[in-house]
Length: 100
Image: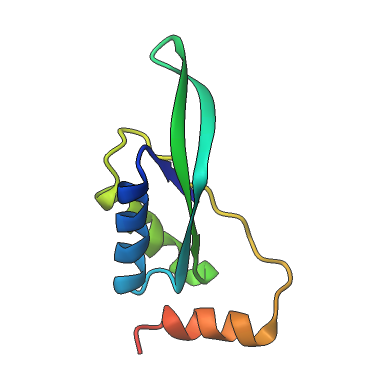
């Protein structure tokens, strides 16, 4: 998952990841309000979350894509392991990220 400061940037990150096959799917969520400390000040910003779906072995490639395509100095990059899921769906994610 990552966040960015406009819906257009979020959609560009999502589309680029799917086109590059580093994610099978990417979902852009409605704006969220982020409150954080940056350069010794408390900031509040509206951001859009992008949730990418990939396989564990594809994480490094997806992280590399996010780092290269993102315009934040320190982009949020968080991975959450999948412990359970629909067999067919997980197979589809694996197939879409295999580059076949």
